[in-house]
Image (cartoon, rainbow, N blue to C red; front, side, top):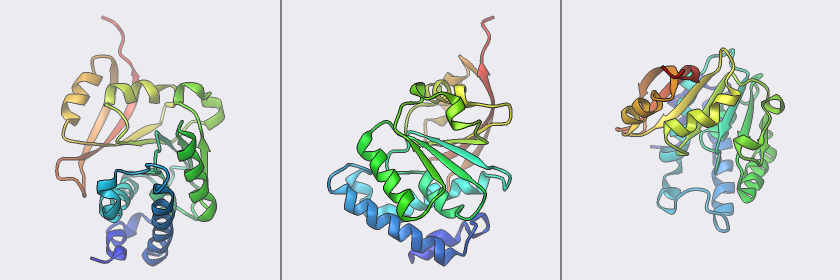
Length: 215
C-alpha cells in the first residue's frame, strides 16, 4: 500500500487533495525521524509504521469532526498525535489547533513542524493545570491519544469544557472499564466508534462532561 492510500481512506474529511496532504505528512515524517535521533517522540518499535500506527490512526479522528468545529484542543500532544495530522488534513479551513505539551523538547518539535508546514497551530508548553482556559478559548473539540486513563483525562479536560464541547479520544481495549471507572466521579454521554487501525481500539466521543454530584 502506498502512503497516499493510507490518506485516501479519509479523503471526504480532508480540506485538500489526498496527494497534497500525503506530501505534507511525508515532510512531517522526515522531521520526526530527524528529531527522533535526539528526542524520543514515538516508540522505536513504531518508527517504521508511522503511516499506519500514527498518521492513519490520527486522521480517522477527522471523520467524527463537524465542518463547524473551529477550535480543537489536544492534551498531551507528545510527538503530535493526533493533532498534527489532523491539522495537516484541515489546512486551509477556518480551524485552529491548540496543543498542550509540558516537555520542552517536544514543544520545540511541535512548533518546528507547525512552522515548516504553515499550520494553524498554537503550542502551550505547560500542563493543563497551569493554563487558564481564558488563554485557549472554549474548544469545540478536545482530543487526546495514549496519554492517560479516562478518569484522569476527565479531570484534565473539565476546566476547558464548554456547554457544546466534545471530547474525541483514542482508547484501547480497556475502554469499557475506563468508562465505568470514570462514571463513579463524572457524568457524561459517550458514543463509541470502532478504530480503523486497531482491532481492539475505539474512538470515544464524550459530551456533557460534568462532575457527578454526591448522593
